[in-house]
Image (cartoon, rainbow, N blue to C red; front, side, top):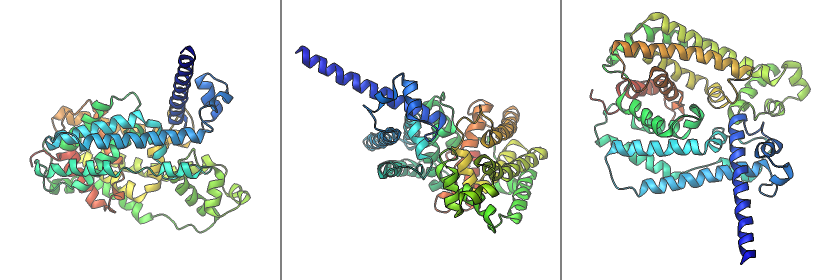
Length: 423
């Protein structure tokens, strides 16, 4: 009996050590990125020799596959629980499902961050690639049922329920990529629902007035200039290298992409690449330079007009819709490629600083709207601005090839007026 107890204790200790390795690796993947994390890093953080890790996981990839598999099981369990809940009113169903998925996103943040990119790292096995192709048809059905039920629960007929479902699905699943790790998931989910279901504008202008606003004209002029200039078709090695880097950074993430990945995608030799481009950092600097400059120009133009808070938010939404559709690769790079952005130098950090300056202007709009009684107080100005910006970042063009006009119309109806608010 003593021997049995001893063996049981060993198994339990082994299980707890494996859990410690898994949890520590998850934190490191989340903070520094999968590619930048080594088995030695994990061993140091756990407080064991590297060789001890191999009793539990053969490689860093095994840990990643384990995390992704756990995420898949959690999604299945969540979907099953949602399917067997007693029927309730539509708004409660949407709020509960949103809260469950946001909570899951933070609980499995490392796997969610891995899943944010459609391509696994260059050196990976079929197991890893399969784990990255995570699908949850049952959760998709749960979202369709919950959001679809709003149609008979007072949702405005003008609201695009397909895009509404996409907004809920995208932001709730990727919440841990958009928000700080200290965020309370249930509070966050409640705020997201408040914004989409009730809207931010207390007395939103009609479409004709919004279309005539000085802020929207400024936004439209800014994107029109970019549309006319367009993006040049690669005509030489240098342009081909930049185009390939843009695509690879978007697919794999900046940190996970090697300079050799870029050379292979561009179809050039490494020597040719280094004669045309100084470094991977220089590539990202060039890619984000014009992208960030256009955002900056549009924001400055909107703010300078001094339009009402709802009109200003509508114009900002127009800019995001255009940028997401026109520059989808840059959008993916900056949405999901921001690990260590606040504490390091480099292209992503520089872009982050510029983004924070634009975010400060958005907070000012929120404060002005709260002070004038034009905007609803979902949370304090900082949190409200963050929720608004996060919902604008959703790539609506990926849903059924949504046009700019359709996406902008949806954002007016949902973010400004609210899905369930009386018209």
